[in-house]
Structures are given as structure tokens and as C-alpha cells.
Length: 197
Length: 197
DNA sequence: TCCTGATCTGGACAGCGTCAACAATCTGGA
DNA sequence: TCCAGATTGTTGACGCTGTCCAGATCAGGA
Image 1 (tube, each protein chain N blue to C red):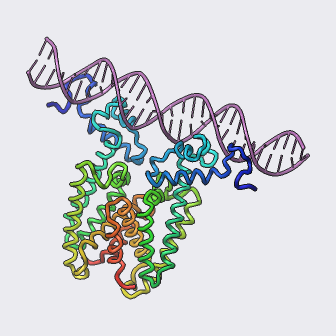
Image 2 (image 1 turned 60 degrees about the vertical axis):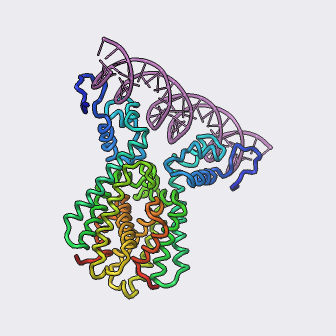
Image 3 (image 1 turned 90 degrees about the horizontal axis):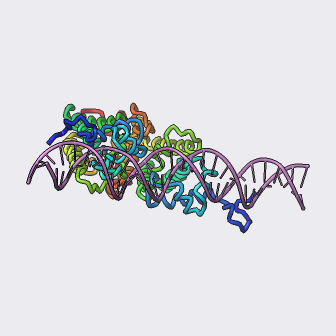
């Protein structure tokens, strides 16, 4: 099997699928998903307006693929941040900071992950669900460690996890939209979780 | 000046502006703002596809008007809930519950308020800003009372307000999207603010 | 009475997502 | 080696959209 065609002819692109995703991703840096047109993506990739249909069922499927890519990045950012931190409180704080940081750095990608138009929660496509599960497990693990720390002992882990997720997600959303300055969000999270490590 | 035409002719509608808003609002109950077409709204109102342009500069202006309407409802729901509750803690909890409740009951309207496409944060139009200010003042007032309560004394009011807003907004967003069951959100908020009144 | 401005209509245009038909190219087996 | 079928491109067409334009209709004041 050949990933890239040896032929000198440009008829077959070789790897149009990822080329289309890349083109869409570069458009996503400057405009929201709703404004991205399939024809413009095709133009950027140098193919006809109908070529994408051989790789994605429709426009929503391409945006969905980008959403899955973004979810993976969001998850991996949290995992890396947690691993780099020491102590239950600092690890939770690092997780939240990574979540908010991703939303601040890649607002359109973050919005795409939670856009019901392209990434509906009931996930009929199977490629998003495992990432969500991994993220839930990551949070559960860290909260389980957190409730062993003095000051958090006795708290219901499930309720605490839900509250933390909501807080971090709300900060991410508000920072992404520009309603809340990024510098305000992180201290607010610290005020919530507590100061010590 | 006549609000409604006396003429039997249907040429002049009489009150097309609000009729268009009503038609769009009824469409918004079953589909997101992004899918609402100006032509469909005009059809519902029984006018030609170009009539809306005499009342709204473009499609975004109509959706913006709906967003302002929704923001007013969201704000008034919070104000009513706060007034009906007694004691600083319960009042804050009621405020949060009203916020989340509005998002759960009117998901598309809530989403519209925070849709940067139609209601950008920098608000060039002047009709959204006063509502936002009123909401910020409402929250500030309640947080100011909260930090007098034992257990909250000494907390930075600004940071606490930001954290509360983020938490409540995150819950509203997650409930609206279906990521978090509504029954889970409210206990989680209680766990955060505290049990007593 | 007539004129001015506000309101509504129909026609037009380009851009969009998608379907259908066709062409070029690759692949694997005889 | 060569051919049949599957893949991956292409062009063309359709209906829908937002928006611009010119013209028709109506209300109220000079």
C-alpha cells in the first residue's frame, strides 16, 4: 500500500483526506466553524468542489473530524499538565489551567468540541466517545486523590467532580468568548480549590 | 401615528418588526440560530423575502434582537429568584438555579445570548450592554452580602463573583448541551456554596 | 390635492451544500 | 502483461440562501 502516489500526474492527490482537514484547520484559526464552507476548503486544497465527498460524507463530517482532533488535543493537554504537577491540589489546578488555556489558545477548536451541530453529546459516531471517557476517568482519578486531602475529606467525589468540571468549563467558555479576562480566571480557580498544594 | 393599519389591504403589515421576531422565536424553539433562515422567517410572517430588510439591517441584526430579548429574560429570571429567596446563601443559590434553569428551559435562546456571531462581547450595539451591567451589579450585590456570612468572610468578592459566574455558566452550558444531567447540576452547586442558608 | 417618506414586492445575482454522471487512475488477480 | 473493478478525481446541475436593486403601494402633512 502506498500513502502517497508515485505518479507525476496530479489527478490523484495522494492524501487528500488529511490535506482537507489541514486546510479546514487553517481556516478555523481565523473564523468560526459555522462560516467554513466546504467549497473554500476544497479550493485551498487545490481540488474541485466535489472531491471532499469521497472522503467525508458531508460538510458536518469534516467539521466533526476536526472536533475529534481538537478533543484529543484538549485531553492530551490536561494529561500532560497533570503529570507535570505534584500533589493532589496542584494536579487538579493544573488540569483546570490546561483546560482553560486550551480554550484561550484555540478558541475555535474548543468551541467546535462543544458544538452540538458537529459534535452532538449522544455521539452516534464512535470516534469521540473514547476520548470523553478518558477525560472523565482522568478527572475522577484526580478528584479521588483530592478527597483524601485535609479540607476535602468527606466531600462526595461525584458532586465535586461535576462542580469542578462546570467551573473549569465555564471559565474556559467565558475566557474564550472574551467575557472574562484570562488573568482573572486562574486566580478565581485557585480561590475555589484552595491555596495550598 | 398608527401602530396597526386600518386599511383592509395587507400591503402594509402594521407591526412587522415584532411579528418577525415572534416568527423567528418560534423557529428558535426547534432549531439553533445558525439554521434559521431569513426567508423562512419572512414566509412564516406572510411577507416577501425582502420585507425584513426594512426592519433589520441584515440576518444577524434579527438574531441579535432575539439575543437581547433572551438576555432580558435571563436577567429577569435571576432577579425574580433572588427576590423570592431569603438569606445571602440561599439568594446566591437561587440566582444560580435560575441561570441554569433558564438554560435548561430555553437552550437555543441561552446559546444565542453567548453566540459571538450575533451577540459579540464588545457589543457595538448599545442595547445589550445595560443588561449585562445590570446582571453584573446583581451578582456583585449578592456576593457582597455573601462575604459577610461566616465561612465566606475574608474572601475576595471579585474573585468569588468570577468563580461563581464561571461555575453557574459552566453548569448552564453543560446542562444545555446535555453533557450534564440537570439533577446533577444543582446539588453540585450546593456542594460548592455550602449547605446552610 | 399632491408630494414625500416609509413599507412591501418581485427580480436578479453570487455563493453554498449536495446529487448525478463521467473520467482518470490505481489495484489485484488471471 | 493486461484487464476488470474499485477509488478518487472532474464537470454540471439543482434548489436554497443572503443581499442588492428598481418599482409598487400606502399614510400623513403641506
